[in-house]
Length: 242
Image 1 (cartoon, rainbow, N blue to C red):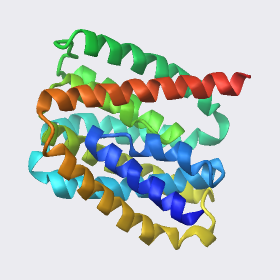
Image 2: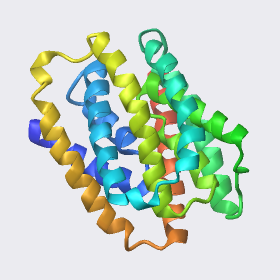
Image 3: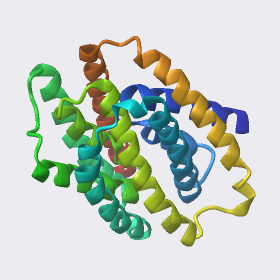
Image 4: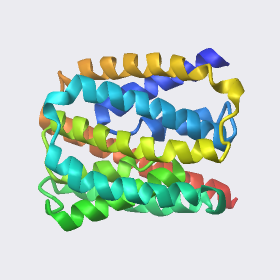
């Protein structure tokens, strides 16, 4: 069982590195096959931190510091609120709403390639705040963050590095709240160093793929990933209602 868990983590990190987000989106449903929601939420968040450290290290020359500041600050602030609401909020309902937005955005962007969100302080605050809030609340805000950052038209190296840095700040904010809530039992602490190794290996492997992908193709891959996440979220909502 543990081998399958760590293997799924490795594959999730490769996907997350290529798309610039998504390791937690892919890994969380898989982790739920092995653990309860709270345990899975913490383990995936820790894994996400390690993966983002790897991405920042491998793509650090592309970091867009201005976007990091104006997008990252509202992300961190709203993450606290989202994390505090975990115990009292229906997760699948929120995922369903987010899923509708992501599907509409991805389809429009694939259909109309020049579709862009205006790169402004207002949209950075909205995108950063919402993605941070959702990351704290449902464990994954990367798809929404990716939708805004992709619309800004950042080169792939800047996109990956900046998204990873913002996600790292968000994870460092929400994880102490999860630990304070007693979400992770001490019997799983030995998973932490193993997840670090797996995350770094996955980030490195993903980088080798990204280097060979043209910018235009890269954007389409991210949009397809966003679309897939949206469909998955709506599926989760419908399943919860039946």
